Amino acid sequence: MGRQKSYYELLKHPKWQKKRLEILNEHNFECEDCGADDKSLQIHHSYYEKGLLPWEYPNESLHCLCEDCHRQAQDWLTLLHRQIGRLELGQIEDLLGYAMAIEAGNYPMITFEVHSYGVAEGVADAYHLKAEEVIDALNEGQIDGYKLDAMQHIKHGGRDWLCGICGTSASRLFLDQTRGDDNPYQSLQEHAINDHGLDRQAVEESYHSRRLDGRAVVDGQVWMRLSD
Image (cartoon, rainbow, N blue to C red; front, side, top):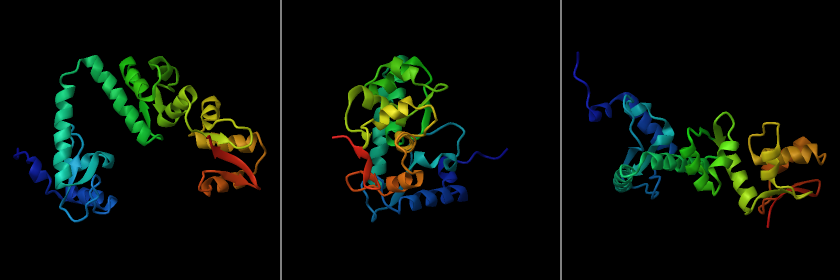
C-alpha cells in the first residue's frame, strides 16, 4: 500500500491545477476581497470536509484571494471556530440557521432545508420573523430567499415592487399564488398578464428593459414600479 500523499503534494496534482485556474479565471485574476490584480493570488477553501480532495469542493466554496486577504480569512475562520466551540449545541443550531439565511439573502434562488426548530429560529432571527412563521412556510421542509424576503416585506414593510395598475405588492402576490412561480417578479408579471390583460411578450420584454427608476411600461401604462 503506497504512502498517502500530503495535502501539499495534492496541490501539485493536475486536477487541482485545473480547478485553481478555473477559479482564477472566474474572478479575472483579481482578489475577491480587495480587488488587487498585482499581487500573488491563492485559492482559499472556506471549509474542509473529511474525504474530499482539494479539487472536489464546489466552486462557490473556493475563493480567489491575495496573500494578505487569504491570511486574514484564515484568521477570521480560526476566531469563528473558537467562538463556535464555546457555544451550546442549541446555539450552534441557531447559528447554522442564521448562516443559511445570510446565504439566502445573497442567493435568494437557492432552496435550503430547515432541519430543526433551532435552525428555524436562526433563520427567523435573520429575517425578523418568528420560528413558527418560517416552519409554516416550509415546502417539504425547504424554503428559499425569495419567500423569506416576501414574508419580511409583508410583516415589516419597506420598499417592494408593486403593480403599477392596482398597487398590489409583488411579495403578497408571490405568497398568495398557487401556480408555483419561482420569485415575486414572476408573480407580478403573471398578475399583469392574467388580471390586467397585458400582452405576455410585451410584459416580458418591458421587464427586461425597465427604466432607470425601475418602472416597466407597456403601451404607456406602468405595470411595475417600486414603492415609495
